Length: 224
Image 1 (cartoon, rainbow, N blue to C red):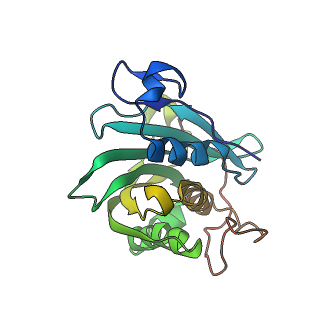
Image 2 (image 1 turned 135 degrees about the vertical axis):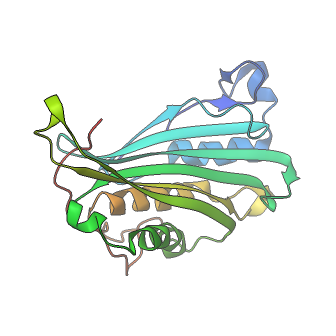
């Protein structure tokens, strides 16, 4: 299975490692939250890598990008950012915030469903709740965009992409540290659901819960 690896950012001079002078300035709660992300065990269809985090959203940030891969097909992709402000943030109602962007290409017959945005948003909240996670202040958008091809690209069939942008506040546990590993697992559940994969067998506390409805199997890779 995949394990997340990456680097810290505390906005001093870009991105630095957890050791050394820059790492010494990282709060312990953030360090533990990131370590849980780095060591989380995920579904084998997930390919996950560190990416440069945003530099102005919070004093501390860590980011991952991921794709759901089946064979040679890239079925869905996304980015997850963990933000931390030790002083707290009124809009977050906490000191941590998770921010995400996920995307997947849809079959035309699914794309015309007028309830698709509401269903996709329910997949996000349902993925968190299926893992037994407590969270607050959720917000976001679901965007459906269609592409038609002309000229030299006219042989391509029309494509529709669904995009979810969202953020939520993970509830903090002991020592003020949220259960980021389980939040990451729930986020991967969402990506797999958008990709049309069936739920994974519930083999442990961080495996998907029952009652999750998936899209049918995707027809192929996303257009890039």
